Image 1 (cartoon, rainbow, N blue to C red):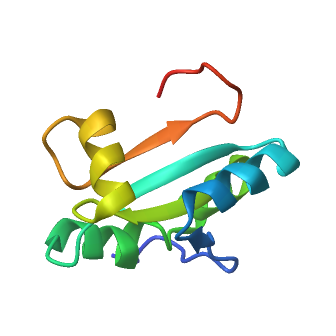
Image 2 (image 1 turned 60 degrees about the horizontal axis):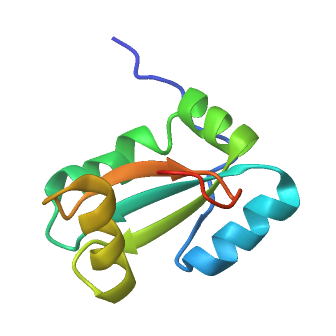
Length: 102
């Protein structure tokens, strides 16, 4: 069985939420936040198999600016707690418009 096609244009991940928000506002896109940790096995599998999938990368590139935040460190931990309950890894999208909920 053949695997799914790999992306020829990778989805770019930043590490600064303020920069991602600014870039998304300029580009008219939403922000895709991936909370991860060094010890999260499924996070590494997502990096290897999901984010590199041609269809997934194409959809993300078309509508989102990506940012990866550590779910246990500073900014990432506070946002992860607010956005995804008690988990330290997970994904959320957000708008750059004020007063929009996550």
